[in-house]
Image 1 (cartoon, one colour):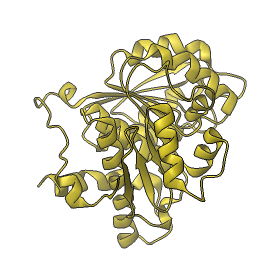
Image 2 (cartoon, rainbow, N blue to C red):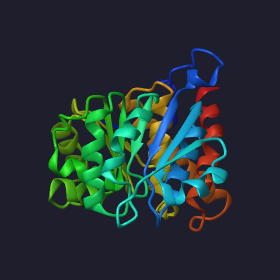
Image 3 (cartoon, helix red, strand yellow):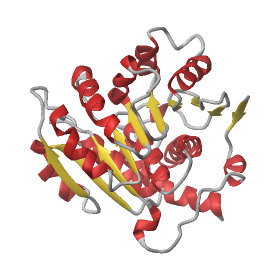
Image 4 (cartoon, rainbow, N blue to C red):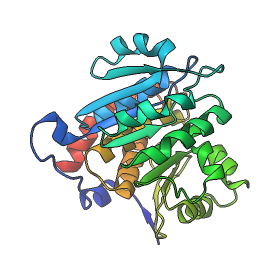
Length: 287
């Protein structure tokens, strides 16, 4: 079954309400990633998570950039860990980062990784130690290539991928049938799959597929995927189920792009501007 996502569909599928006004009741998200060359990726993801109404965000990244990220995301706590020769997080840091994940409601892994081999080794060391929900983004999904059933991931999982990343995991082209490709990975892995593109596709393991046709070419910009992954993580932290978090995040991301295209221009808005559109969109959906 394939369903096109609209604002009315989301109004009929409301997000969980916070148990209280205390920030912990709106969830804690841990964003793990970045590298010496791409420290901004975790900033984009962390800010996007906060824009969903998530109560707290923590960032785990490489030590060489941690001190610089703190002032850029003053709402978060930033932790620095050892890095590989390519400037990515070292697998040796997984144990300490898993301890941080134990205090979070969701862990997002992968934003800003630049080396597939280092990414796979790091996620392989970290994933089995996390019990709660996990979002694997971008090169973080390199782990899925060798662990397609995600048997070692204890909690629910969302995979946020673009067509080239999905093609790498499946080892075949996605373009002829992106819906089928996303559905294949969801069935194989047991994870919810959010595939970006001109039409966003959310495939869930039990077989249903959701499509989002909002958005435009301006979303194809550096950092856009990090924002979308952060939206998924923030909604999971708030208590949404994995399929709901992926569907809502896909629509919010795409529609935020439409709003910026109207106000700024079809092309040229920045990924870091997307998150600022989200609170008003959430208010519109819950009014």
